[in-house]
Amino acid sequence: MNPSTTVHPRPSADRPRRYLGRLSALAAISAAGWFALAATAAPASAVPAPGSGCAAVQIITARASTEAPGEGISGSLVTQIVNSSGQTVARASVSYPATLTNYAASSAQGVAALKQQLTSQVQRCPNQKIVLVGYSQGAHVVGDVLGGGGGGTLGATTAPVSSTVASKVVAVVQFGDPRHVVNQSYDLGTSRRNGLFPRTSAQLQVLAQYASRIHSYCDSGDTFCDSGLNTVVHLTYLDRYQSAATQFVLGRIGG
Image (cartoon, rainbow, N blue to C red; front, top):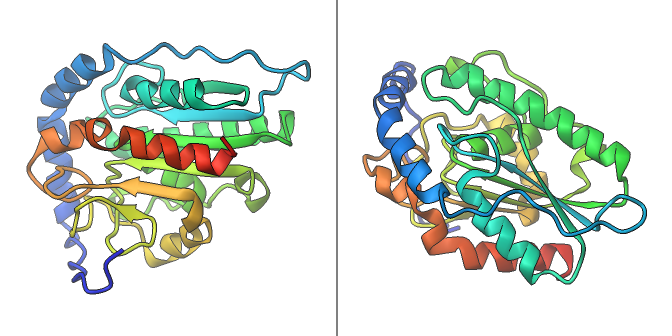
C-alpha cells in the first residue's frame, strides 16, 4: 500500500447501474476471453488425502463470470500450488451461476453457496488449512464471504461467515475484484481507483482482520476492479502474478 496515493471518490449512486449495463455489453467479449484462457487450465483433480479423508490443505476456487462450472482460469494457479506443495492438497470449486446479465443475483448466490461449502468443509475437517481463490466475480464472492456483502445495487446486505469458520482460512487470493477499494493493506497491483462496487467501510473493517492472509491483485485500467476500460488487463492476471500468488500461498500453508 502506498500511503501517498489519493483515494478516488466512490461512484455516484447511478454509476453502478451504468456499469451493470457495461457488464452485459462485455459479456460476449469476456466469455470468449475466458474460454480461450481457461482451455489450458487443469481439471479439478486432487492429491490423494491421508487416511482420515481430510487433506492437509483444501483449496476452494470461485470462478470468473461466464466461465464454465469448475475452477476456470484459476485452475492453473491451483495446479502450481498442488505441484509445489509437500503436503496433501485437495481442490474444489464453488457451484454458482457466474453470470453477468444478472450479476447481483449471481454473486449473491455465489456468496451463499461458498458460505455453506466452507462451513461444511470446516465441520468435516476441522484441522484443515483452507485456501480461497477467486477471479473477477469469484473474487467478489470470496471477499463478501469473509467481510460481508451486498448493499446498494447488489441488494440486501449479508453477514460474513462466522469467525470460527473464517479462522480456518489461512490464505486468500483475489484477481480483479469488482469490490476492490484502494489503499487496503492487502491490495497489490497498479490500481489507484475503486472498483465498480466498492465495499463499505463496515465490510472493509471486517476484512482488515484477515489482511495478512489476503493478496488482492488489481491493475490500472481493469474494467471491473479499477473502473477502467481495458478488458485485456482483467483477463490476464495469471500471466503477471501466478508465480507470486503461488509463493504467497505456499508460505501461508507451510510449504
